[in-house]
Image (cartoon, rainbow, N blue to C red; front, side):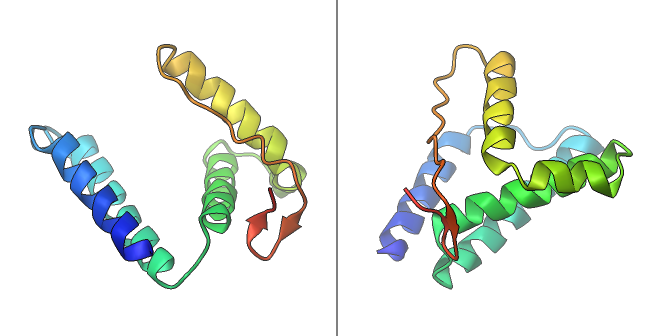
Length: 121
């Protein structure tokens, strides 16, 4: 099941980005490096049967940890928001909508309880 999905995603990614220019500066090079390595790690986790919802929650948790550290907030700030993933996700989606107003971001409204596999539908 995952093999077909991963192959489709990989082919779509190559098709979408086939005509992109190479990174023009150090920031773009670092962004491309981060993106490609993040994709590789995510694919490894998917092959190891980690669920998509668990990946989403894990990425959100790690992003929140990095974002609070980068902004100089204390641990209490991180702990406060890490216990409210639905609120953080909704605020993040709202922020993305302001950055990309013509896109059609859809929030899954996954508000069920947490389980070993992430949010239950």
